[in-house]
Every structure is written in C-alpha cells, then in structure tokens.
Length: 258
Image (cartoon, rainbow, N blue to C red):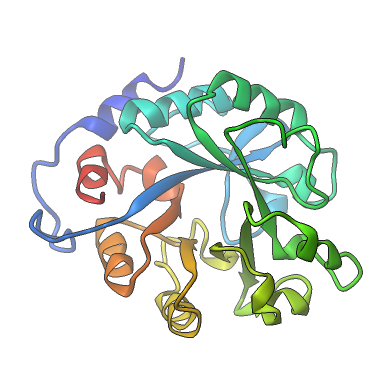
C-alpha cells in the first residue's frame, strides 16, 4: 500500500494558519467531491485538459499508488466523503471504455455515490447500480448525436465543458436550457490542475442567468479560501482533485467546509 504516509499528512494539523485561510468562524457551506480520472486502468493526474499528457500521479501526498481502489481508500481515510466523481477518459476520448473497472468500483463501495462521466452513449451495464449517477458531458455530444438528451431521465448530471473560454460540444446543449437537469457541472478544463483558481466570473454568470439550477464548480480549486469564495457566490458543491493530492485541502479544512 502506497498511501499510509499521505493519509497521515492529510490528517496532520496545521502549525500555522496561512493568511488566505478563512477564519474558523466563517460559514462555508460546501460539499467537496473528490475527482478520479481513469486512463488505461490507472488514476492519472489531469492538467489543463491536455489528456494526451495525463499520466499516473507521481507527486501525490495523499497516495503514491495509481490503483483506483487504494486511491479511494486514501481519500476515505482522509475524510468521510460520500460521493466521488469518476471520469473514464478512455471512453470520453472514444477509446476502449473502462466499464469493467467502474463496475468493480460500484460493487466494492456500495454505500458511496459515484458520478460517472463515461462519454456517450451511456453504458447500459451501469444503470442497474443504485450508487451510479450518470454524468453527460457536453464535449461528448455533437450536432448529430445530441437529440437523445431530451429522452434522458431527469436523474442525470449535465457537465457543461469549456476549454480556453470556448464551449465544447453541440451548441444546442448550451442554448436549450429547458433540457438541462437540476444539477449542472461547470467544467473549465484549462483550469483543471492549473493552480490558477476557479473561473469565478463564469460561475457567477451561470448563477445569475439560471437561478433555479444547482451549479457545481470544477477546475482550478486550490484551497479553503477558494471554497469560501465559491460558497459566498452561491456554489455549494465542488469537484476537487489536485488540491487534495497536494495537501492544499486537508482534513481540518474539509471539516470547516460543510
């Protein structure tokens, strides 16, 4: 097991509170959802949407293993997460899917919820699992295959994907707001793993233009200060990977962000 030291680091207290860290008295209502990107059966480090360069984690303080089961156990030892986001990058990029591995994950952790983006079409093999929530990414849809979104059940999550300020996928998905489900991920791929912070402006615009929807931040989240900022905007859920692996969000931070 390559995760013991990382787990200890995740749980060790801070000796000095950085200036950017909010006061413990600040009210931060935020559900942090760990992200697991799967490529060729391993957990990889995502950075700025350059998927051809994604490779297994080498500098994670949380877990030195790229085995998905060990990584999930390391996350759980750090904090009692109840929901994870899984991205099957092979399926998303139209290579051989990893449905077999996702099924194993769903079976091994039946009490955890998994939001799964495995491209389009959705895998019928996963729909029978009660802990499976499909995520439909806009980048997987084009002008020829977007029509089935109107036939999907309301129990799915839409991911509006962006790269370098441009929407990815069928334009119709971004325009036909009546087709949107309740929960929508705003996935800014060039922010992912960048350490540059979330796209606060885009998220603020989404909240302003669509006040009835639940938006989930994804990409660039660095620390507790970012979570506080998002919470004040009205974002209550966030997908996070790098900040957890690098120890920028520790167990005590996650306890504050509830």
